[in-house]
Amino acid sequence: MSSPTTGYTLHRNYTSSARLNAQHLLWKEALGYNLHPCIDLPRDQPVRVADIGTGTGIWMMDVKRDYPAARIDGFDVSFAQCPPAEWLPDGVNLRPLDLYEPLPAELEGVYDVVHLRLFFVVIRNDDPVPVFRNLLRMLKPGGWLQWSEHNYESWSVQSVAGVSTPALDEMMALMKATGLGRWVPGLSNVFAQHGMAEVRKELHPCIPHTRVYWSQLQFNSNEEYSYLAMDNSSPDAAGPKLRSLIHQAAEECRRGAGFDFTIEVTLGRKPPA
Image 1 (cartoon, rainbow, N blue to C red):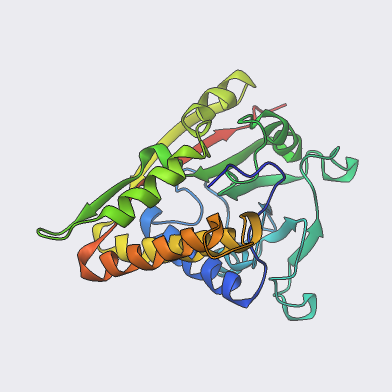
Image 2: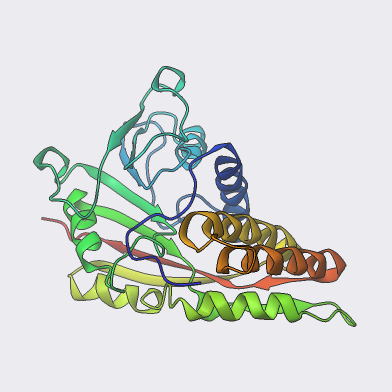
């Protein structure tokens, strides 16, 4: 596997959407929240929330149940995985946005909360600062940024007694070799260096019983990647080889093994004007 150099390298079809929706449920179970408890929003006022890289929009729908008066905008470069706009709850909207382009003036200083997660496959050159600066511009003074990630350096393979894991070990080595997410541990420093207040980083270990579920999602995304970004010109090419490895790893997982990792949540508040 090689590190992607030009943005998103996964499908936007129905199986990909099902993966993202299942991932949301696991992510929420690991963290215990959609919005961190320190983000004290009134539930009866039209607070403004931005969900960056909204994907299927499922995080927005979940937050809307918790904050029914909130106005939530979901941003992405594609809405192929979202419900049609006519089916969205009142106060939930979709807006196209590429964070590597100049931020439209009408989005500056608008949001009480900006949320994003799993941008580690999108960030270019291991440098989150260009994206961060646009996120900071979107916040009102006093607004919160919540950015959740994992990086492959935190990953390990765990198993019950007697289960060997050569395929899972090889997959993990391939993923770590991409270098994806090596910038994540320093994200809180980026927040602080740009003047954000109340900066904190929290670590959420993988819940043991969910290791199998997370591993299954990883098999799905790696299989997608093998078709979209790898050589599939012959049975011995990199794509078919990775898919064969995934099938072996899935069998190890079925016998009692799986990936383990830590989610990192970084929070900060834009200083009041």
